[in-house]
Image 1 (cartoon, rainbow, N blue to C red):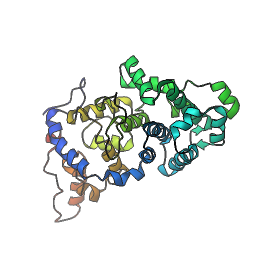
Image 2: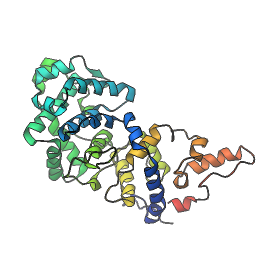
Image 3: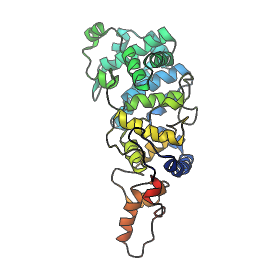
Length: 326
């Protein structure tokens, strides 16, 4: 049996060869375009200009927490009021303009002042660097790691005049949640999601407009759906949603595709979001799951249900042993 070492987490070559064709077939069968409307990536897909895409994408990612039916109207309303070019809007934005846009804005942890910092920070970055990619690449070169680069990126975005902003709009409330600085031990799911959109592709979902960052350095945008499915597929043994777990899942995915390790993210995440792979396994769902033959959980769920139904057939993929999947 080939096990993962503690010093080098990730799938063994044998496990990778077993899982790769199954995940590739799963990815090929996923109708990504049909799922875009259920994903915050729908917002940057409204735009053609690269600067409008990156500005709308970072705003959408920053607010994409909680229930989609609650954050989507908030993002939509802001973008509608920012006009046809979000990039032009933030370039010209000042504190009175931010107050006019965000007066009375509240979404869960965040108030208008928090979002104003993000928009003013993006405007400053565009004026000084030309695009958000340059700001990120500067941090990546200085820090030498993705975690450090993301921390430098959010710190730079937060360099706006806070005192006059507070005087005009009131104190910030959830700024660290919106733009964490320092980054901390969390998985930074929304920031990694933004990077995936900017760096990967172009394809049906991701834009590939950042050309100075390679997809090989990306980290999986780890959330509850990815964490659960990653555990089912043996990509990690960890249960927490931390940066360390995201690193372990990504290391396993690099064993499948070293050049583009997060290419499976959208399909796997939406498989969980759609209810096809819920937190509490459903035998009927598991039985028809295209990944059943690679799953560590589904065969047991189906087998248990089969034992309760006399004469029922064995589940598809149940002949694949646990030993083969490691």
